[in-house]
Image (cartoon, rainbow, N blue to C red):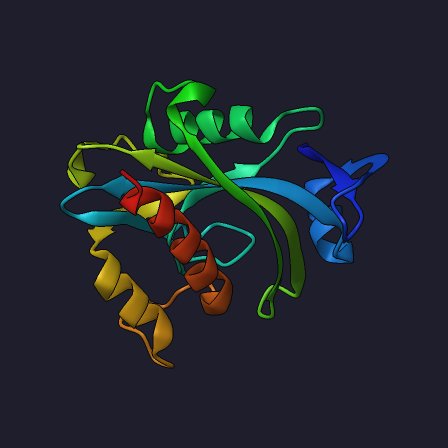
Amino acid sequence: MEYLAIYNAQNEPLQQTLPRRQVHELGHWHRTAQIFVHHPEQGYLCHRRSRHKDLFPSLWDISIGGHLSPGESYETCAARELSEELGLAVTPADVRFVAVMSIDGQDEQAQLLDREHAGIFLYQTQREAQSFEFQREEIEVVQYVPVRQLVGELQVPEPVRAFIPLQTQFLEMLQLVQELVLKP
């Protein structure tokens, strides 16, 4: 069973851990790492979540990510998630920190709350999408989407892809990441 450390709305630790499912049922704040995988010519790596996920199954996500284990740093989690979900051998030094953003989401179908203090990271690569050895239990398909197309899809009420219903937060994160991509 996976346990998560819980935090208050200001991202201060409450010195308590709870089972992952209980954290989402009760709506406790917890920490995640969200890594934006960027290819300079092809855009951002998006993926459709597995239909077996408890939160947001079969919906499209614009970053690779996961929960921090109790006591784990954002950077270590980011490297671990890239390894687990995409089969990449990376270290915390390989990801660039962008910001911490609080995201208050809800999966209405599953009746779960997803309140995250998300560490946002950028990972740049030249790898082709089909070369990732992605974790089939987590991800069904991966695809690069050019930034202009991705922003456009996130701004329309009925996008081509059914995204996790956090379009406003996704656009904010994408803007922060894109600013870092465009820095010389």
